[in-house]
Image (cartoon, helix red, strand yellow):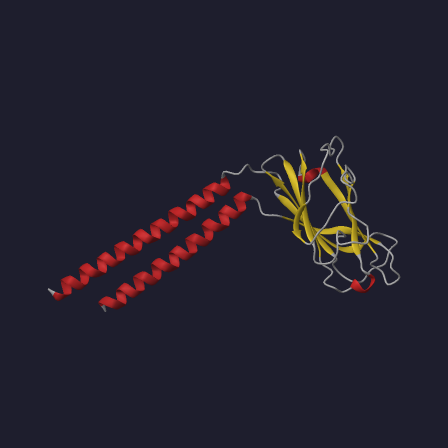
Length: 226
């Protein structure tokens, strides 16, 4: 009788465990399905690193900024630019002057305003209309609105795609020992994962975790009956 009770309790515990595992699996599948429902794009996004200057200039100081350009669901590209020279050159008070780029033939920036999204710090444009199909110009006045070390900002170009932009160049003023400016080339472009790739990764991880949990549960059940 005692053995029967133990067996019944064990079965109930296993049943509860399986129910919880199924709920977790359903939640994981729902999350993955949500990601997969996002429209696939040829390129979800690209990360750029600015650590190399253009031909004719000299630099050995390493990375000064990073940029991510990604496509959004409203039919545009979201840009996030961050200055990260980590206080290494602040003796000359450097700041980002502009981000320059080429656009594919037939593409252009047509919007009349470019609201900046503050992420860190207080970055401003040079003027409200200091942007277009070749560059975004930031404030150069000697005030708190300069784009300096540790600051980051975002913005959206409407009706554009990641592939519309190429040859990205970042100009940083007062970056040399003599207070001169340098132009850094966007290098090492790496893709931002697409929603389908993220979903596949989630499902794979969930499957591995589920397998391990079930295996451990079986091992503990066998130990209990031993």
